[in-house]
Structures are given as structure tokens and as C-alpha cells.
Length: 255
Image 1 (tube, rainbow, N blue to C red):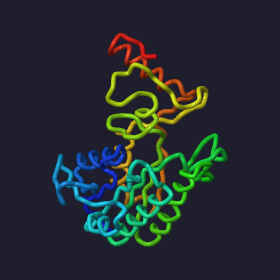
Image 2 (image 1 turned 180 degrees about the vertical axis):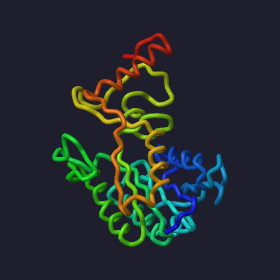
Image 3 (image 1 turned 90 degrees about the vertical axis):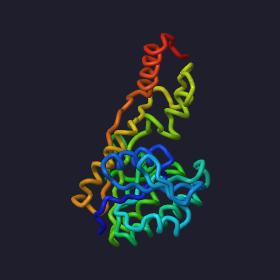
């Protein structure tokens, strides 16, 4: 089992992947990141080594992961399109690379895996019977990771609610509540009022993953954790908080 401080981050141009990459760098890890269409084959920027490659190309992933003790699998299909065709092959490439290096795979998990029968309290052992196709694909990832964990690969899954925070990427906050990069003139909540919603501050999620990685050798070979984050009991508290901040900063209340 590899125990060095080299890590490959897939999806480092995205929200959670980028945040984890930066936190690992700040914690003293040697961070590599794969980037499609990079101008240079290798580019050192902000303390991260960027490698030209594609998570859909097995050889790219395998070569990038050489000598790494950890692979962070935070990559999604471009534009979140073709999930059913691309998500599983990307994971298989990561598993192949991790198996070759006896590395740990870190997967940012979601609540899409669960259906109504997991309520009222979701635990790591709750049944995974999703009601959406995306959730079914998410569930399908885990047996593959479990099998890999029986063949020399360690697996760490951290599930959290919807992300918010700097550079959070695609999520309800930046795509639904407010318009990213623009003055907040209106707050639009895409959910149903009266239905609770789980939120997670992106830097907290990344920090949690880094701290768990520091003790990975004491965890089960296949370990999953739920991060509490912030519970919005009726779905309106986040919207209200945004309005309070906007009023305090601008003196004007958004619609």
C-alpha cells in the first residue's frame, strides 16, 4: 500500500475537486491534477502540477497516477451530459490506476443514492433505493469500489448536502438561488417551501476529506461517512440568510 504524499485529483477544475486539491496542497501534499485540453503537457501553477489528459482515457489516468498514494475521483462528464454512458467508465479508469498503485480512492458522495425508505435519518448503512436514474448510477459506483477494496485499494466516501461557498461550481446555490458573478437582485429558491434541505460549506467538506485521509490507514478498507453540514428545516433559511447579507452590504433587499 502506497503511503507517500502524492495525490492525483480528477475534476480539479470543478467545485469539490478544486477545493480538495487546494486543501491537500496547503496540507503539504504533492498534488497532480488532470485537465482536458491543457495548452502544455505539464504545467506547474499555484503549487499544483497540471497534466494534460482526460479521465475517460485509461492510459492518461494510469500514467498521471504513477507513484500516487491517493486518487481523488471528483470528476463528472463534461456539462453533466451523458451520465449513463460516461460515469462508470471514468470510475473504472480510476479503479484500474488505483489498483496498479495500491492507492486510496476518495469519492465525494451524494444523497442521490437514497430514496424515501432511508428517511427520517440517513445513516451510512441506510438502504440505497434511489428514485432517479442519476441516483441509480451513483449507487452503481459503490459495488465497483467495494470490489476494488478487496483487491488492495482503499476507498473513502464522504457524502454531503448541496455545496455552497467560493468556486462551488454547479449547485442549487449558484444556479438556483442567485446568479453567479452578478449583483444579487433576486433570490429564487428552486425547491418546495416547507421541505427541508441539506447544505454543506465547500471548504468544510474539503477539510473533512483531508483530515480523514490523514488517518486513512486506521479506517476500514471501504469506509463511508456522512457529513452533517447545515440543515435548513423548511427550505427557506438559506434564502433568508442571503437576503440579510445583501441588505447589510447594500442597504437594498432583493426580491
